[in-house]
View 1 (cartoon, rainbow, N blue to C red):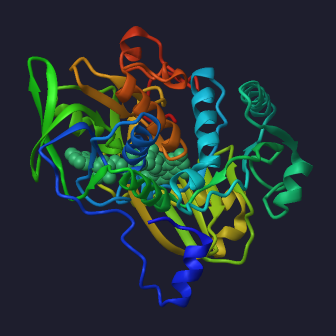
View 2 (spheres, rainbow, N blue to C red):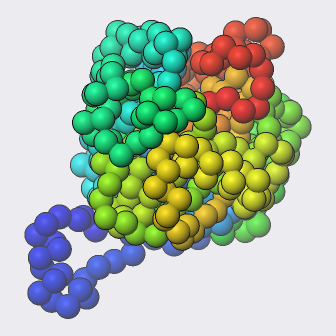
Length: 416
Ligand SMILES: Cc1cc2nc3c(=O)[nH]c(=O)nc-3n(C[C@H](O)[C@H](O)[C@H](O)COP(=O)(O)OP(=O)(O)OC[C@H]3O[C@@H](n4cnc5c(N)ncnc54)[C@H](O)[C@@H]3O)c2cc1C
C-alpha cells in the first residue's frame, strides 16, 4: 500500500475502509539469505537498504518484542551531524543527508523537522572547542554557525543569561539538525522493507546461533530454527547479551538512559537546545510537550526504566538553563538500554565468525545514525566490504589502540 495526499482524500470520503496494515505478519521461513536480528531502527533500516539498494531478495528481520518497542521509540528524537573527528563527521553527515530524503524514500511521514540544533557555550575555552568542531563540520560539507550571546537571544530570549552560575556566551548552531518522530521511523522502514518482500517477524526472540566449523549458518529462536547465509546483529542495548551467545565479549556496557516529557505548553522552544555547562537537552514536540533528557543512570542494567537521582539531576540542568521550566509539570518518563562503547563511537563490522556481522555501540546517539547505520551495515552484509564512511568503525580498534574518542577523555562507558 502506498501513501499519498490523493489516498488520504479518497479514504476520507469513503469512510477509511481501505487502509491496510503497515506491514504484514509473516510466519518465519526455514531459510533466508540474510537474517537481521533486532527490529529497531538500525535493523529495519538495514533490511530496507539491503532490498532497495543492494538487490537482496531473501531477508528476514527477527524482533523479540514489537517494532518500535526498543530505543528507536524511546529516544529524544534529536538528529544532527555536529562531530569534530573525521571518522565520525563523514558518517553522521551521510546520515543527515539520508534523513533529508527519508520520507520520500520509504513513503512514510516521519515528521522530519530540520528546526536547528543549538549547543550553548559558557566559557572561552568551550567557544574555541566549538569553533574547531564547527570548522571540521564545514570541511565535511555540513553546516555550522557560531553565534554570540545576542545571536542566541534572538531565538531564545527567555534563557538565564545574566544571573546564571555559568552565563551563556553563545552557541554552535547547526540549522539542518532537528528532530524526527522516532517511532514513525521504525514504522516507515518496516513498511518500506515489507513492501520489497522483507519478512518483519515480531515476537521472535533469537536464543542462540548455529555455528558449524567456524561459520554461522542460522539462528535458534522462540519460533524454531531458521537457517541463514549471513546473520547481522543490530540489537542496541542487548548487544552484549546476544553476542555472548556466540561466545563473544564486547568492549561495551549496557546502561539506562531516561527521557522526559512535560505537559503540553504553548510553543516556546523552536529548535533543539543543549546546555553546555551540564547535561541537559530539550526540544518541544508538535503536541507542545517539552521533550528533554540528560545523563545516563550510570550503572549497568538491562531494565528499561531508570531511577530518581538522575531525574533530579536532569531537572536541575533544566532549571539552571531556563528557570521557568520549574513551573511545568512532568507528564511522562521512561528509560531505554544504551549500548555504551568505550570510546563513544559505534561498531559496524564483521566478526571472527564467518557469516556473523555486528552493528552496535551506539551509546546515546544512535537515533540520528539510523539511516547511515542501516545503509552501511547493508553495504557490509551485501558486499563484504565496509562502506567508505563507516570503515573506521572496526571491532578490533580497541585492541589496536585506534579509538575514536570524540571527547578525548579516554576509555569510559559514558561517552557519545
Ligand atoms: C532515552 C533515550 C534518549 C535518546 N535520545 C537520542 C537522541 O536524541 N538522538 C539520538 O541520536 N539517539 C538517541 N538515543 C539513542 C538511540 O535511541 C539508540 O542509539 C538507537 O535507537 C539504537 O538503535 P535501534 O533503534 O536499532 O535500537 P532498538 O530500537 O533498541 O532496537 C534493538 C532491537 O533488538 C531487539 N532485540 C534484542 N535482543 C533480541 C533478541 N535476542 N532477538 C531478537 N530481537 C532482539 C530489541 O527488542 C529491540 O527492538 C536515545 C536513547 C534513549 C534510550
